Image 1 (cartoon, rainbow, N blue to C red):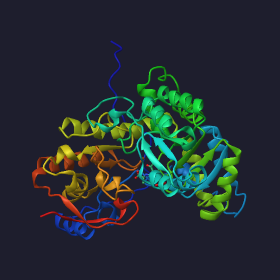
Image 2: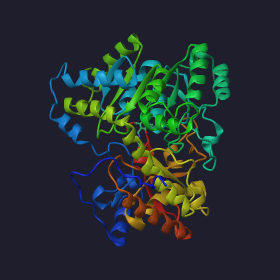
Image 3: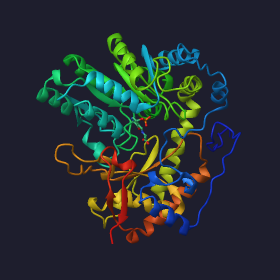
Length: 462
Ligand code: F0G
């Protein structure tokens, strides 16, 4: 009698300001993608209808955050907003010392230069583009120690971000702990499809690294999303709050780099946070060379205020449930349409399996790059390549790295698009899938030296 009626899910906010988006014709899109060298990074945003290039810096800020901008204290030194940010980082993440930077890669640069010496090895749960390049520029070599399941899009392991403890220990034994300045642990693993690491696994990594006296540096760019997936999936955590889980994750690591443009709901910002005073002093000294004074790094006072507020909002249950919920909504819709995607559905986007969608292309035909261009041409939806182009070249041999995963990422900005937008995206992917035999491969016509996916240009292989 009292059976509860089903209630639909809805966004935990209402919309106060809108920004029009522009639909283009197929001919306009054809010209635009050709002009962009078939690289979605080189499109003008005015030619994009629904922009799923990235969840980085694309969040809609809350009214509280916008109000926070008005409290910007733009003093060169000792800005009040720095102290608010420091307090937020100590309260929500538990790290002791804060060095603000303009975004994540600046923090990666600083920590890599401080901790890595030439010939060092940095094991981690799959590479990330900017993280790896800074490790290499500091003289180190990244070694992937993620579990094998992470390289298989079909495998439904709930924690595909986990580190393979045996692989890690054999890397330590092979090179010796002296050559391993730290283990690089990302919460959720971007390149694996937004896959989380479990607390059980992180505890095992902590135990092993402590035995060998090795640090853990945490890429905490999407830590709240990882914490939410732990709450959903890991035994023993369903009653814990996301806030508690975030803090527990951070407590198992020695320091962190953060691109605050993701989880923390701001359009620009980042930081390095550490517990070791000596490393902090070195980082604080370096930041004045590359970013700005240690109480603002590369940020305006107002940006630090918005970030302090964003950190608090990012761990609120209603927010994170809706954020990840929207991604899961799109993922399930695509699965129902028979679209091959990385499983389980990750936290920040849907990753299309380009090898499966375009089976007629070899990896040298750049399937993911070609698929992203085809989706744009179909509907004006902008996605991103995460395959052989992103993986770059081996610095020693100069040959392409060929990752197992050849993916196109439909990345969902936070609090920006509605469920109706997700429906339109799914329909476009379905249309391209049905017409996939007509999608031709691409070849490089220009390739820059670093992080080539951002600026390379391509043309269709005839
Ligand atoms: N670490 C991870 C896991 C990231 O996803 C990013 C950025 C960074 C570090 C670097 O941070 O951009 O602030 O300098 N990822 C963006 C993306 C670019 O689209 O995935 P940044």
